[in-house]
Image 1: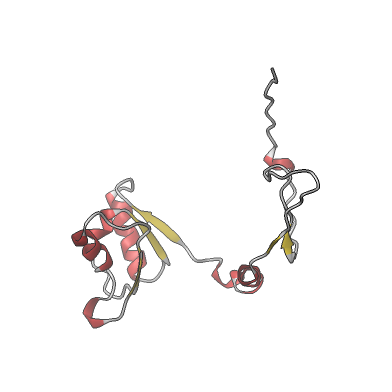
Image 2: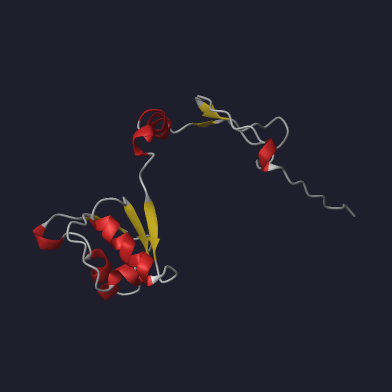
Length: 139
């Protein structure tokens, strides 16, 4: 019978080092392969690599907040107002956003999953594109 042993790494002893790679090497701890049957390395995503090297500095101040029943009513109202004013880039919402909240110039709604009914879908996606303005709804 083999005893299980656990290892815990101390986060303060890890060294994070920025590197430009063309391929991501296979992780020897998580990959399952036969000896001598190495899988090829995975190519890096050039889009994100370039994005983080050039554009990420411009969006470092972008802020998003939660808008759910777990947040106090006062905090939700403050977040809605900041979102209306453009001080918050994103609100991550539960169905709390579905009922009665009007942000007139909202142009994008991203639904993480399909709502349970067509009426819920219409309510949630209808938060965007008010007053004849175009909207993008992603499900």
